[in-house]
Length: 293
Ligand code: GLN
Image (cartoon, rainbow, N blue to C red; front, side, top):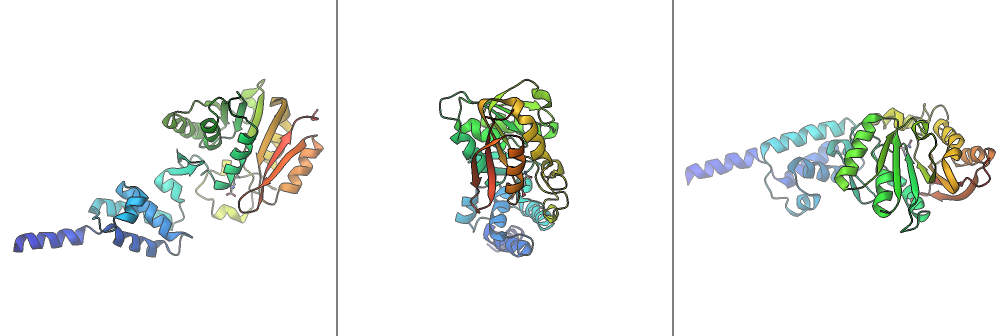
């Protein structure tokens, strides 16, 4: 009994419980994250290979020492500002679990609005030809294909590394999307689509937001001096890649609506719809090619 007791004591000291780790992690993350409890639960779930629901349901579970050490390393990285999605290598988007690496922008919840708009213009059962221009992790293309299996979805990106991530996501989710390495429309020279959906880099180069975006690919975020460089380029080029009655759907920065509307109007685009995200920010513009020369 004495020997067993000693053993149990040693084990208890070496192996912390899930609940204790949650409290420790919350304390460590308090100054670094705006959601320390959620981050702590998700990191512990990841480090111990459980679901978050198990972390919540079984705080008394013991965690092997090696797992707790792994957790400590993850927390240190989070404290240094690394996004949670890169630490857990996953981000949910439109209910799809996507794998993300630092080669791709982490899909944002507001981009789900762009998908919703695309779906609204791609009726069920129709073989819409859809292009996701600058697909990154594949988020937009995969969400559309998942919701509209009949759609013919093409996803393009200039980054081969991003396409590797996107292609792996498509394979894991069993979604048949065609991937093309292309600098904007360069490799899609004579192709036309019913919908072109694009979340281009639109953060102004000098924007202070870059302090918090340091871990993500600059290529996916930096829209030049006023943030509108890529949007300008897409507005100018997209007309040659839309079918008659085709639509261009653009995500943009919350303060770029007026400038973008002006640019689009100058090129002859008609505004079919303009939407705000859940935070109330102007975010998505739907443009019709009718009238564009
Ligand atoms: N919505 C992103 C952000 O502000 C920017 C994404 C983009 O440039 N397309 O963090």
